[in-house]
Amino acid sequence: MTAPAPIPPRVLTVAGSDSGGGAGIQADLKTMLALGTHGMSVLTAVTAQNSLGVQGAWELPADAVRAQYRSVVDDIGVQAVKTGMLSSAALVDTVAELLAGTDAPVVVDPVGVSKHGDALLAAEALDSVRTKLLPVATVATPNLDEVTQLTGVVVTDATGMRVAATEMLAFGPRWVVIKGGHLPGEAVDLLTDGSEEHWLRAPRHDNRHTHGTGCTLASAIACGLARGQDVPTAVRGAKEYVTGAIRAGFALGGGIGPVDHGWLARPAL
Image (cartoon, rainbow, N blue to C red; front, top):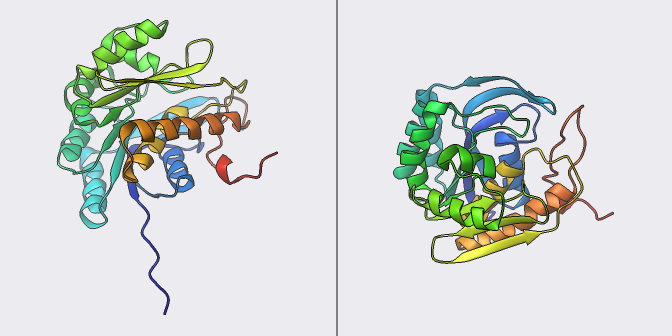
């Protein structure tokens, strides 16, 4: 008699679709598979997107987002949730309300601008992100452009990262990762809950194909939390996974290619 297969940790992404496969729910689900979890998705928007940029975006109705979420959570259940592209105040409000009623850690990637500079969050939605979404986050993972969008702080060095973290924590997340990848030198991120600091350092790889890094990091953190890891352990493991994915990123199309979500399973060269 065959024993039943063990059920992997279940992780839910609430995000937009990237038709090019490098970011969005596609990146999230690839990351979740690579890290041994069962990925599930709530689609918030459809984009026409490739290596050159975003050519179009179409938001789903809030009722459709709510129905997808309830369908998954009420039947299958979740052990962690990750949010990505929530392009309007209506979607931010809807998702924040759903998350507040879910007993699982939440990783909020406050997606504002794509890798190519395309706006993915309406200006009028910023207040909803600050007052409704960030307060339900276990971990928030803004990059430096998103920090400026949300707080007005312009970060140019490590001191600025500390200031940015304080401003972000004031919105209510339990932890924040200030991603310093846009600064020169080592790729340094700051993880803090306001009382302890973890500076996460990695070598900077000379590879322009980095599409999907933010989605991938947030999803990898959610995978660690779903496994029962504490936040510093989950973030440290996610940083290592993303660093490897950046190192193995490859060219697609005529622009910026994706990180390699499957690098762990590929034979070393």
